[in-house]
Image 1 (cartoon, helix red, strand yellow):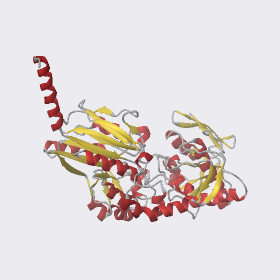
Image 2 (cartoon, rainbow, N blue to C red):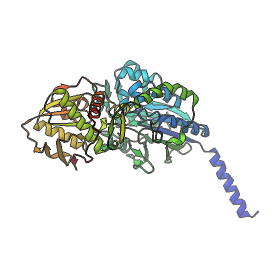
Image 3 (cartoon, rainbow, N blue to C red):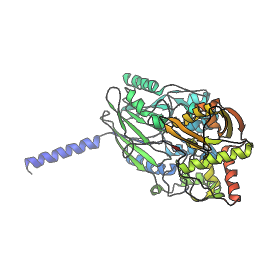
Image 4 (cartoon, rainbow, N blue to C red):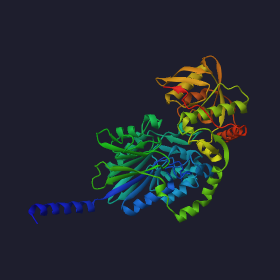
Amino acid sequence: MTLKRCFFVLCTLAALVVYANAETLVVLHTNDVHGNVLPYDRNDKGGMLRIKVVADSIRSAEKNVMLLDAGDDVQGFLYFSLFGGDVEYPLMEKMGYDVVTLGNHEFDNGLDRLADCYSRLSCPVVNANYTIAHKKLSERIKPFVIKRFAGKNIAVIGAGTDVSTVVSGDSGVGYSDPVAVVDSIATMLKLTRRADYVIALTHLGYDSDNGNNSCYDIKLAKQSAAIDLIVGGHSHSVVGKGGLPNVVNNRYGKPVLIAQTGNDGKLLGKIVIDLDNLDALPETEFITIDKRYDRPQPDVDKWLETYHAAVDSVMSIAVCRSSMDMPKGSAALGNFVADAIYDIAAGKSGLEIDLAVTNAGGIRSSLKKGVVSYGNIMMMVPFPNNIVVLEMDGALLQKCLDDIASTGGQCQSRQLAFDIVDKKAANVTINGKVIDPKKMYRVATISFVYEGKDNLVSFTNAKLVYKSENVMKYDILDYVKSLDECGKMLVTDTHFRFSK
């Protein structure tokens, strides 16, 4: 063997030894799964059962693994509508989550119910910027937790969005600015050597446009001094390879990695941290969660049988037919729901209604061409809102429409049209007539909007003149059934009723 070749072999062996001894931490993460236990259409992506298969496989192959969730575990699929968390949280326990934080939808059924749900989950729940007026929850939720891997202390600090802007009624949750709170804890943990690496597990949103609040992950990263990694949620953004930019420099110029996996469990995030070089930027990837990971899991499958049967039953009840596909987020679906609110309010209240508006965030799933089931409607508008009628003059209505325009537009009935100019509503017409600031108008909407949520604060100044006694989804079920009885299929226009 030549001297040159001998040197090459020795270098190769040395590299293999270093590689073999390298310690890594694999962080798996989810966010905004919204209770997607398993897609009803098995060809759709996502599903907690599938994520469990992948996570279990990675755990069997890797020494150090931590599974995190960045909130909104529930709300949007029938399991939560029917069982209120009795499926999702025990299943999360079976999936082996190590740390989770709170999303806004965790509060949808109130604090008592949330405390009951978290009693089914043994892992730590972290949040540092909420003050929760509930004894069990305040004892259960901690600002941070420290996990130890290969002699290194990894801190996970939780932070969440201001739920008062996105949850109906009084949430009972006090809110503090996440930047100051999280970074001060991170700095304290590092200065006292209690933590070698800090992960912020957040439900804030990626940026100001998607996060819909004053604090978001990019801002947290830029203004921080001691955070190494942000695992986020709330804005349903895909942040990382093939998605939005995922590296932001902090106030000292050090890069901070941001990660988020979209929504409904369609992707599982994987971050590999080099425990021997914590200053190195971690490697990241997304694992697409689809039917490739449908595997028998006998104990879990047996436990879920009753729940699956109930969901199948609700999905099998046909209530009407649609003449077209109405995808989630499309103009068609938003127009259909807004027009339905208008027609329902006019019919039930007996009042003359001028227009209807609603928030796009309250419409959670698509309607497909063909048979529409009871379950499809329940998933489309799952929240416990009521249809209401508000009275206001044109000057206040203009302010309400400006609020809508500032969010980029929401959903509006066929009677209303306007342009969005500099985040204001311009050239407003109602039934083809220019808005009159002195005229009184009746506006149909939902209780969530009337409470000023989603930053639609001007609606709180209107006069409430009617509120349906039914939850909105049941009013819409009755409405589409009545159309079907008249031989009508669901149909609407497919263009947005505002222009930018």
